[in-house]
Length: 114
Length: 116
Image (cartoon, rainbow over all chains, first blue to last red; front, side, top):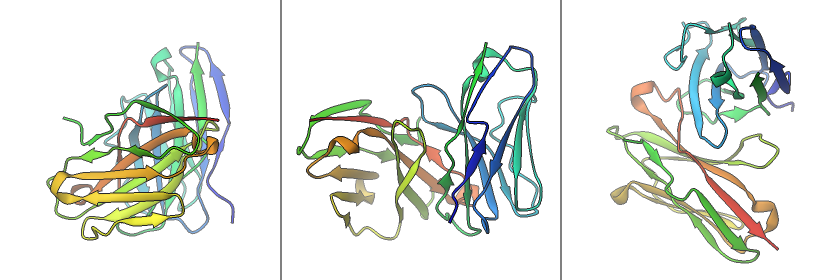
């Protein structure tokens, strides 16, 4: 079946502008995760959604970052007033509900803030 | 201290050589999960294996094998007879009970370059 999809693939924006990144999880996956990967680095956890529970926002680096998810479907990660240090690949993953279910990743959105 | 340490930043081998990627983790939980992911140049992370802390049996899948040793908190990954297509960044990750197993803590990755 279809994997996790993300859009746009690439985004170039100017410092100070807002951006929205979209993630479509695998159908039937109730858990959804956002990660950030800076150039040459590992993945940093940002936020986690599980069903209708309150999201785990513990990884969001500042209040400029927010995310929403509608039910068990699409999620949007919004970065307001972008800064150059926000330049990174933003990866979305989804998994089945349950203990340590394997996370399946999308191709990522490459964000460049000029 | 890092929870997941991949000390090898970059490894270069020639095709057909065997190569082992090291992963050392740190956790206070008795129940946890370990993962390996591959990130080819295309950028998408590909799941390779998940192992829970109670299963110390080594696993083999084709040319890939994993050696899990709780005594040394290591979960090493070996590729036998490497191929050019194995060139990628490989990440080791940990999922712990305290987070409800909900999040993955990744190492910084090891870049593997396999030349013909």
